[in-house]
Image 1 (tube, one colour):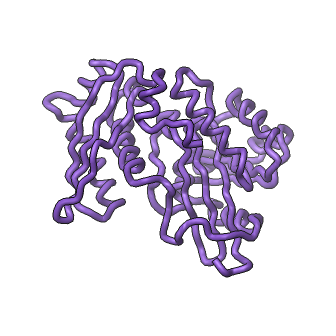
Image 2 (cartoon, rainbow, N blue to C red):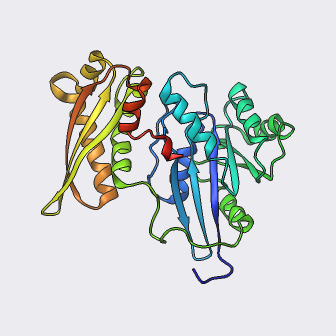
Image 3 (cartoon, helix red, strand yellow):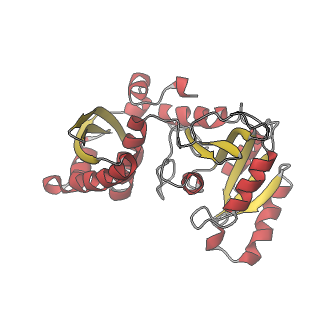
Length: 300
């Protein structure tokens, strides 16, 4: 990049589970690269989204929701989230406008006190509250930490998001273009495909299923412009396997149909998706399985 006025940098998005970090990232990037769900702890890995214009490139790091770990997978998610704070140019601390500041927010604030970078407070989901309620929410946070600026936003509807992006670009240092202009994420296609499948499991199955599910891409082959994908959905118990498969395979068919449409939209190819379900008891507490399913310490 020869433009001496080009701005670039890395910005972490942190917050409690289910505050809308992935929705925000998808909004900014302009397409789905992070899966979304109303269930907490949907994001498990750090997901980098790349936003590029003629004047700037921002690499956003969407982190897992910071929470108290319950197993080795939870430990991985926490390490992943907190490590994102170490080498970024700024931090976006996102909170939910519909919920009062709680212990989870206070825990994150304590972590942010050790960060010597600009921190922006994003009050998300303002589309769900009265405008009169925004100032009292700001009051809950402004004395807890020194914020560079505060932005009430709606990640879902886009309110104040362009203004925030303009500010971030102005504040970022001059720097190189790290990724090609048409690249929107640094994650390999296998990762994104597995996440799109996992999203459909989250959407369609009962409350007990989501956190005990992983998706492993076994193979991807191209045959005459048809993309053949074979994937395995991992669960922890036989009962969960029955739920994911459904009566006569009905649930697995729904998961496959919805996931296939998203994968086709992303890849621009016709897709044949073959799904299998496997029981692996207590996989979330087995380091070797976490590694083989893509939750690796070298990811952060």
